[in-house]
Image (cartoon, rainbow, N blue to C red; front, side, top):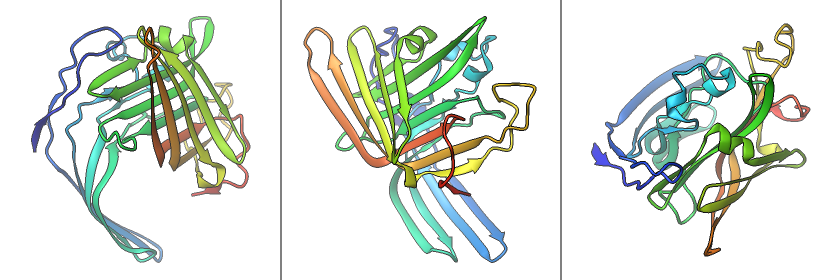
Length: 272
């Protein structure tokens, strides 16, 4: 399959965004047996998307904080999946036109804290995607919290992923029966306010085997956990500066929400 993307200008710096890509369907066949359980799949996907970087691309080759090195490139933020998935636990599922992503590889380590959100498709705005991340980084003698965002919106890629933009953005997460992540950032021409939320009982938790990146680098005994759900809801409000024109886009119960933090007790979250 050969196709061209259709993104216009990059709002942050005004450079042209080419958007051209050649993507062939990828076939992934697998068979795994674990005691009495078996799972097999035969899945392919196609995409017209080009890679998306949550951090400024030119800085990956430089000497930057390790936490930023872990903010990786997504090969394709929106893919159409098809095929089949079967298990003796739930039977066989046919997959036809499921929207997801060829997602991130975060490397071999984990930061002390990180919140990550991904929207592969907004309701009634099928070509719009969103990726957001919040983390704490050490810049020399300073410790800063960064919130980075890349939005593909109406054939434009809006990249608010520089250290300057990230350190001036607002990001706050609260835990309760519903986990709420509120964020706000802005470009030269628009203000962006959003909420990513999911019920507590929709999350699963995975113990992390690599526990070296704790607040105390000399203490490797702290058990860290990764919480994630694919049932989050995202609402994004876009306010155009000057005209005050408002656009609100939403993705209901189909967003990815991932958390690594030690600010929250993981009791009562299902562990796998």
